[in-house]
Length: 136
Image 1 (cartoon, helix red, strand yellow):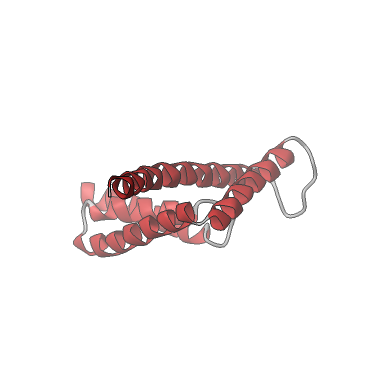
Image 2 (cartoon, rainbow, N blue to C red):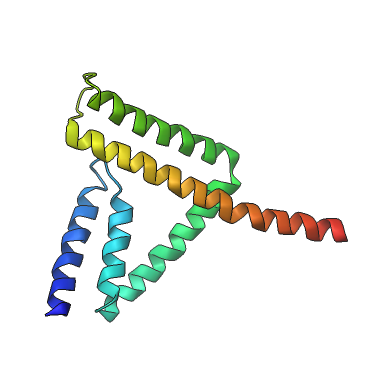
């Protein structure tokens, strides 16, 4: 029974995540969550989860190391949250309704959280490299 519940919930999360790749929302996050859930019961889900984890880690480090990409990511996150908040505050924004406004806000906050994680993860490594260079 547990395996069936995990399969159904994982597939639902996966389908929603795929839909959110083209709709406003954290699609990749839901896909990763679905794969993590499915990997608890199904061996086949572990391989794409490992692949996605590796790509995500590489992307996080790349954004944290590039000032331009970090700047674009911060501006994008702020824009997502701002558009969502403005729509919920009553400003008429084309093609945005209450549901998409909430999803925009969530996406922006997830992006901000990812950026904070990326900067904290890369910063200690950079500090360690600087200390090693100074010791030489």
